[in-house]
Structures are given as C-alpha cells and as structure tokens.
Length: 147
Image 1 (cartoon, rainbow, N blue to C red):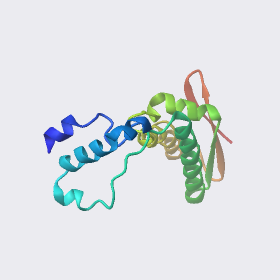
Image 2: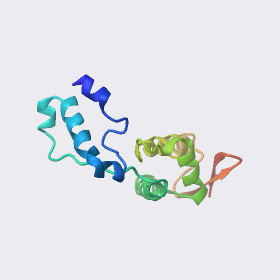
Image 3: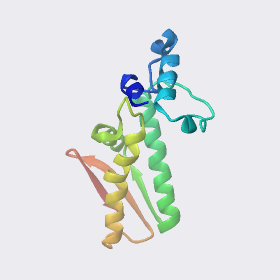
Image 4: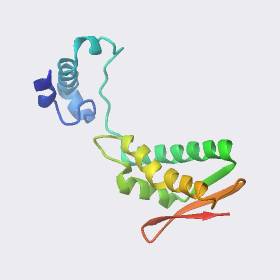
C-alpha cells in the first residue's frame, strides 16, 4: 500500500483533464485503491478524478465563505462584517489557494486573517452588538474598521 502511494502522482485525485483523457484517471484510481486498506476502499461509494480548481473558482468560493461567516456572526452575535474585494485577493495570496489542494487552505486563511482578529476584537470589548465591521487591505495588512 505505501509503495503504491509513493508511486502515485503528486496530485492524487486532481489531475488535469488532458491527463485524465490519456488513461491517467484509471492509473490514479488504481494507485488510490492499492494505497488504501480494502475495508476503507469499500466504504467509498465512487472514485472520481477532478480537475484542479482555478484561482477564479477559489475567489468565488472565498466570497461565499466570507458571506456565510458574516451571516453566522450576525445571527449569533448581532455583529456583521463586510469585506472589500481586496480582502479576497489578500486571502488567496497569503495561503488561501494552492493548485494541488484547491480551496482547502482557504478555510485556514479565513480563520487566521479574518475570523480570528474579529473574535479578538469582540473578546477585548472593542466591538459590541449591534455593529458592522468593514474589512479592507491597507499597506499589505488587513484593517478592521468598526462602526
């Protein structure tokens, strides 16, 4: 199993479409199957190979995640936040996008750079409900303007 995992392509499960057309999909699935224990493989309903997410797709996901996060904060604490388009670029440039990992790093970047600092503002008593926070980028750093 471990030898098959080492022999598998670095982007196991995330090959480009032209590679998949040349039999790579079957090789990737075979490598995954041999890398996983049979009892784990049998728990999977189906195996599929996806194209990597583009930066534009991750940007759309970032916008959606920011909206969801702001909505949740508003519902739970009565505090909303809105981000400028530059914030999405900031998140992507600072670890929120990796062609091999897709949008997975975006969640960590969102927590680290947006949700964490907003939580700190709330815990320090600098933001009280009702409030709105404008998040923007200034001199390469995120800034939080509370109103």
